[in-house]
Amino acid sequence: MGTRHTSEPLESKISELDQDPSSAQGFLYSCNLCDQVLVLSRLFINPRKVQLGFVNICPGCGFELDKTLKVQPSTVPPGKRFLTNPACKDPDQLIKPDESFEAKLSRGSKFLRDARSDLTTGIESLDETLILRFGQLVTLQGEPSNALSHLLCVRTINPLPPGLDSDVVFVDGGNVFDAYPVSRHAFSLGLDQEKTKLRIHLSRAFTHHQLSSLITDELAQAVDQCDARLAIVSDITALYCDPDVKEKREAFDLFCRNIRSLAILAEQRNMIIVVTNLHSRSNAMDNALAQTAHISATLHDKEAFTQLTVTRHPFIQQGNTEIITLDNQTLTRYLQG
Image 1 (tube, rainbow, N blue to C red):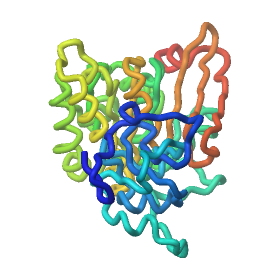
Image 2: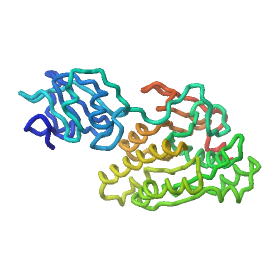
Image 3: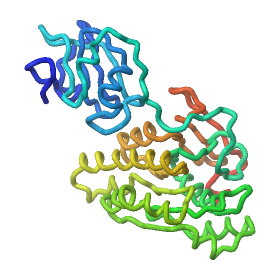
Image 4: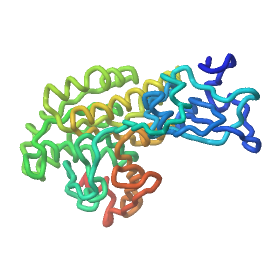
């Protein structure tokens, strides 16, 4: 990999750099998700300038740098002052002394803490914590997320109020869609069970390439055709982590692009997209989900209750978590009746 301001290459990953923190005399800017090196400089550069220099996109993994940019002290090669990844659009702009610029790195809607949920589950403590809003990509980790996704489907179809009177697109990446809980939830809400099931537009994938195609090539069209306000992608890491997948790096890169496209689609169509991940199969994929979503939460069934942990939310300060306990019985048993 070459650089714009030196004849020597700037290595692509942090692990390939000769780092000695004890003798650091500069600053290293990199992607915290994929360790892609962006800038190495003796002078401190406003991180927002680095984000703008790369159009807020990491050239390594494609994720937004306002969520993944990392700055750390670093050794700088002798005789060098400023090195950049070739993907930087305007390296000279980074080292200009004028700091009077306005960074436009807005991502998605701005939410108010006192906003109500656009889509509710009917479980008060859950709704007060998740606060699902249009324009959001929501990732739910843990086995109970599958039962919750079926409830959200029926609540979306339920007429106003409290539902959305909307069709649902369900992309089944984990082969976990179950018509039985849909019928049971419909019955409990007084809906016609067969008509309710017809309003859920189901597509199944059996390989990670099929799932990727459904997400990037067909989901937007399906959403538009049925005017859906909710889309579900079930157990999303299952196919990308299938033992038959030989090219692991290619699968991960594809996964990252797919997650990013889901976040963009949720914002563009002003809808809610829920991605479930029933089991943790890849730390890198778990991190990608958590860092790309507007809301990221984990549901864990214990013996007598379910614990909900929200690690990312527009209403929660970055780095903080919010934990609640759903008492009396586990969420899975409650929803399955």
